[in-house]
Amino acid sequence: MSEADQLADDIIVNGFAIAESRLGVSVLDRLRCIPTEQLASSAVGATRTSSDGGNARVRLMPDCPDLWPLHQDQLLLTVTARVLRNPFALKYLQSRTVHSGSACQTLHMDCDVGTGAGKLLAFIWMLDSFDTNNGATQFIPGSHRSSPAGPPMLAIGPAGSLIIYDRAVLHGYTPNQSNADRRSIQGGFDPTAP
Image (cartoon, rainbow, N blue to C red; front, side, top):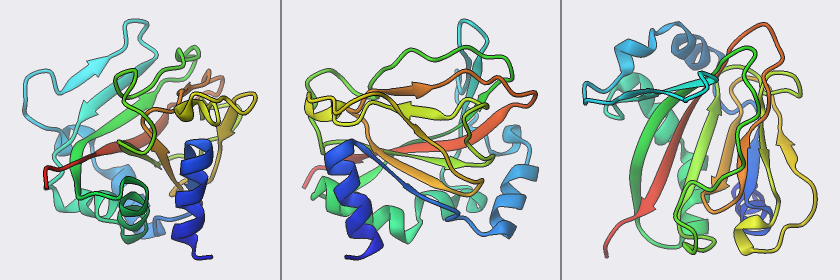
């Protein structure tokens, strides 16, 4: 079974999958050094901070060449095509910073209730490692199919890893108990009209 097939199967069954160390060191280092403001959309409301101050999100410009490797990654596109089974397009691209000392995010879906499994996909690129102490994202396996398969599972991995998930799966970041912010770049794909 190919890596893409295995990741697609994991998403269909559990709601998420991880491809570790996907970004090359040079791409990862470059993305870490570019100020978020330089990649940000100029649209009104492009920067949002949560009401508790625990995280900040900045809408990014997907046409920026520095961001192409993230939403044009061949493995990501192949897995998305296998799960969605329809033509798709990038819906959003944003940076997220989970600040040091932030509390646990409420479990949620990134779509309307009733959307159903296999309709919308999202991805998270780890600019920093995700671990048990710095606010890694947790998922409720099977919740996208209305059949939770057990306790939350942490999506942990080294910087440069990729999480791909069904936007109907329950998820949220855990408390960041480290002394540093935890950064990522996230995006989502929606089906396009035939």
